[in-house]
Image 1 (cartoon, rainbow, N blue to C red):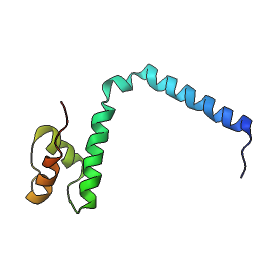
Image 2: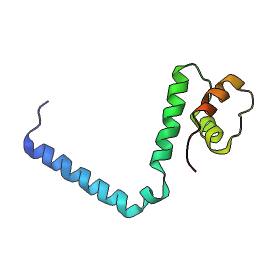
Image 3: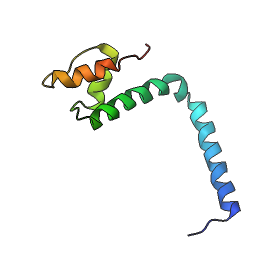
Image 4: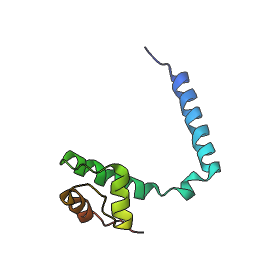
Length: 87
């Protein structure tokens, strides 16, 4: 499948319209994308190392400092070392 330049411009225009719509909804002001990205990085990097915590459990651990029930303390401690998220 090949695309011509006019199709790329059409896609770019659609992207710009979508970005404008996103901005008008104000989602960027409500959602802290940087914080979510940091939580996701911590979750995935420790998951690779064998952690059994879910992404939600990771978020609660990092933001609230609460250890999940029925999970290895080792998993929680690995993630708490990464707890340099600013509130």
